[in-house]
Length: 157
Image 1 (cartoon, rainbow, N blue to C red):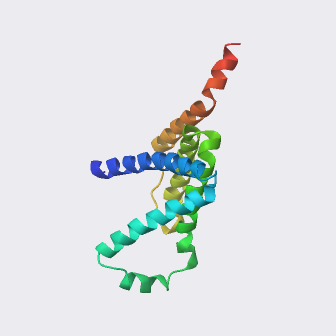
Image 2 (image 1 turned 90 degrees about the vertical axis):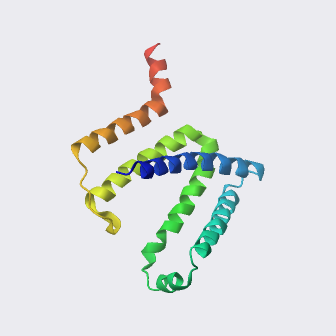
Image 3 (image 1 turned 60 degrees about the vertical axis):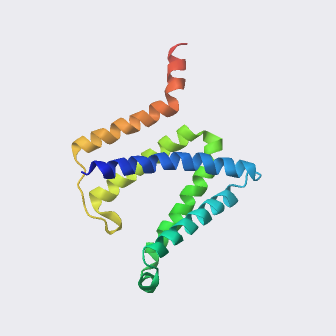
């Protein structure tokens, strides 16, 4: 695999954590309105993406092709909105670390299923026993991150 692509993916993870924290602070500053904070986040992102799309050569042929797409292919926008709203809503309630480790666990398990079974018309990439073991280590890490202090406290009584 390309090291630059791995580094880019790592940076996306950094951006997710920072985005959740920034959006949470925005929501707090505007009266704890998580929906409006998510809307502002999406609006800012839409403006940036529109500028990038126009700089890349416009939208003409792309917009025409959109009309022929099945509705399920637009679910990404709804899922993205749910993700942004969820992070804005949950970060101040459960903490950023708990939020992110649970997001990672959800992404890991869902991604494994999508790859293994070729769901959503993605290429099928069988999940090996070694990758399953790696996922188990991550899930155990999530459990330790979420409940480790309580486990240690209960053992020291």
